[in-house]
Length: 121
View (spheres, rainbow, N blue to C red):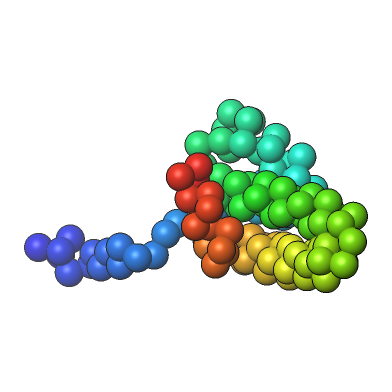
């Protein structure tokens, strides 16, 4: 009977567990800084199955691809000169947000990016 009184109520189902280790946070942050680390994190055995690392790594790779597209757009006269920097600033802002959320150990679904890559998470 005393076991029932001392039990801690379960957390709500909407809360997700944080990263399994500080290494997971570091991989997520480095993934946003350099896309190659995000790709490596998806291939390393202990981390490729961890949801926190997968979420941030896939989003970081999508941002890296968007950054490459933005770099390509700059080479197109007139339209690219406008669209390229806008894409570049958006990628930078989303990367900073992703880094902050990863350091805090939060799962963050980037507005446009997550919808494009959710099947890979």
